[in-house]
Length: 144
Length: 93
View 1 (tube, chains in turn yellow, brown):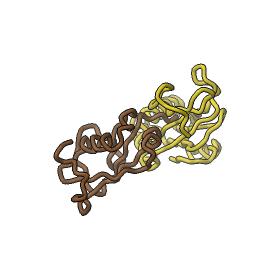
View 2 (tube, rainbow over the protein chains, first blue to last red):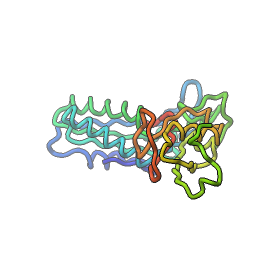
View 3 (cartoon, rainbow over the protein chains, first blue to last red):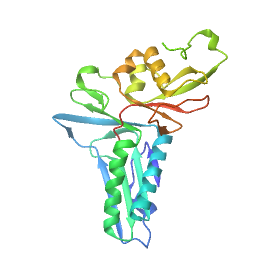
View 4 (tube, rainbow over the protein chains, first blue to last red):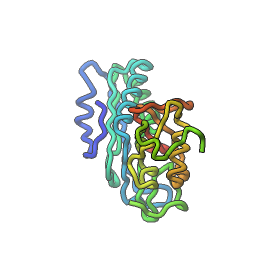
């Protein structure tokens, strides 16, 4: 299951869509919105994606995982739009016969996603509003 | 600007590509897409030069181009109908 959605992520759906009775190890990773980034207090995050390319990158990550670890199924679901503190921004599920492969596949998937998938977050904090990785506090006013 | 760069009206019947902008790039420029004129020699490097010339505010956003949903590692030719995107540093997850 690969999805980019403006709606809250339902982890039960992702788990159900990913695991089968053949799996003995199912690993769920959740990336959630935390209260603080450094010393700044987060109000909310805004996620934007280049949807077609992001979904394609998820597919590629899954192909890597299937060939490298023999994991049976991998799902990646990522939010877009406004995410408030505590909300799930990304859910990844790896399902495998054994736990070791599922853990490693899940770890690989989130690292790859953070490095290569065309998705961006804007942090709205008590001191500024910044596209993470593109802007620093000095070079931008608060654009919404 | 180099010989491949023609923004004049003589290009109106020529070929164009649409470049999609995202996140910081979209906000800086104030547009979701920018149309750029191309000829058979135009490369991704030329597209970046044109983007920077037309929208100097984009110089503040580092980014790389994707063509047809693939990151471009080396300079390559672009063709009418290609799906081009300017990709600022990603920050998903």
